[in-house]
Length: 263
Image 1 (cartoon, rainbow, N blue to C red):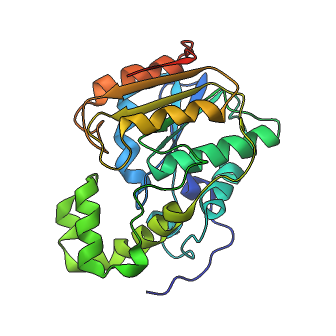
Image 2: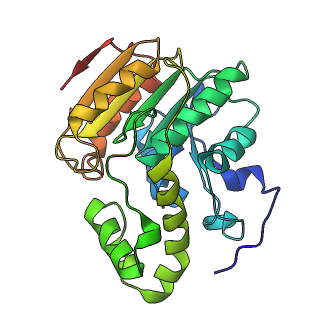
């Protein structure tokens, strides 16, 4: 499937602003999982305080960015999002799920380097950035049926979409591209790489990122660190959004994190 490059997508196509009450006092930037679409996270608006603005990153090759070249590296995911953040994004919490946590880490690094460090980072169901991927998918070795089986095993995607040939043709290229990035990404720099607080969330039955692997995120920051493990698999939050957002909103509203892990 061909993708015609679009070097200058509209900012609102890259970062969706979903506002509650105005004026907002802080913003939560959400970065989707591999193959994820911003649409999947739009419902999160209703779980946030009214004065918190929800920003959702949309990766190339999907949604309004469908005609863009597919991403080849994490910079293709993180760079446009940093550039598209609204100018009034002063008090920011960055959250990523699965591969999105790696994108969130790179967004936080870029903002910190530019003197605009986020107030906090929340990583969900993801290995620490300096670790090799222990659950690589190797999409280049899989035909469409095998790739769909791998996606279903992880959860998080509507099986009806994956079982519909025409829809599969639309979404599988971006999923392949994202998994290829996630497979090989590894932060090579020195740690700690951030000084903002980091909170890590995960599922106690996650086969992709076991709970014991989550604590390594503590090495990525010189700031406060907290770890919470909730019931569920890789998409543990889907049936427990209320419980998930109790932890997220504690960070968004400024509750202090602890430099310890609670499992």
